[in-house]
Image 1: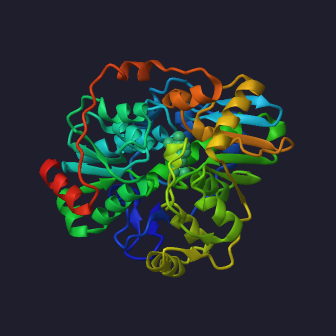
Image 2: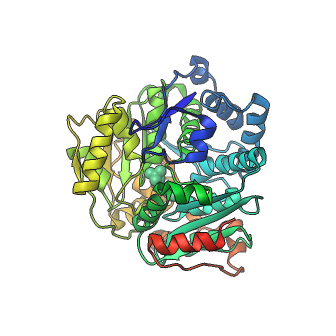
Image 3: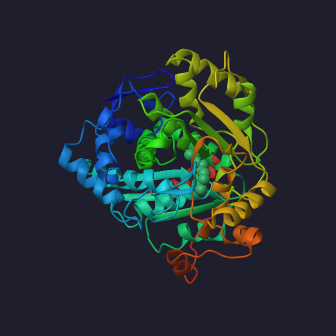
Length: 452
Ligand SMILES: *Cc1c(COP(=O)(O)O)cnc(C)c1O
């Protein structure tokens, strides 16, 4: 399969190349040249083992590695989840399901993308003999998932920018207590968007990117999106047959990567009635899906910090498809966005989407209600997914993180503190951080001094 840029620049590239580059050279994001239809037996099948399903799906796109090699990479990526189903579907009510995506090593759904990415980087470094520097920004969970995917691997140093004081203590510990010498967690004074802007700036300086052999782990990497497609199919095949006709996937959303993956599989034939974009009080996407206007506001720190985002990188991929794969008009809109700071999407059609927004109070109330009604504890991000659900449709709410990652907020909501053994062990370890000034110039210099 070939991959093209949403902005139409450059020539189509292979899976391996799109993976290695992250961002396309024209500043656009890679998307598959076309979206193949899912084989119909995938959808009637009762849930296959996760790794087998992942191979079925990913081999449509990765036509570079031979089967055996890809199977091995996938097995290693999904082999050490704490639940053997990897993404088990829990039924809470007649029409209400939770897709638990937090059984990976860093306890968030981001492990699904980043475990695979870690192993693909390792394979790439072995194959080419060229070491790389991985640079990313995180609102909390991407960083810990990337670090769990890459800690201790040979030929790679990892630099993760995170907003100091705006992620939970345990999220910070997951990044800073690994003891691995190739990991550089960088607290910055600023927001996630500030970190993301620095990463984008350094990544689009092609000379620097080449010199440092920089690679990306943010959801701009198309492989993350592809990896995340798999659990939508897995969820569908775990549903009772009666619930398969009008499935609504509810996705706690920040950067639009997770929900975009679901929408992409829907384009490939997964029957879905609707995708519900669940935002916290940082509601740019809520406003977009209600008005067609994409207008960033300030970031307001919330109880669901991994969604404290205004500029949703993956939205560009959606725009591209919304423009019927017209890269020219996507480029024009992105340029206008850069110039004016906001855009109105012409002929905006949100047909498969609707959106909700949760304040911090809603988050606490939803955690409390789900505990009372179903004796089930959800994390603050997942709680946004429980906002205003109608009881007469089938809803699958994606549980994007383990509640034990956010003990303070859960305690505030229901008076108890969920725990997880891997997190308890971290509390005894020392944090190692590398504070750097929140400017592209300072981060550039740090990379030059500490890159591999
Ligand atoms: C990253 C994250 C999200 C948002 O996902 P996007 O793909 O950025 O939309 C939601 N919940 C949790 C727990 C996360 O870590």
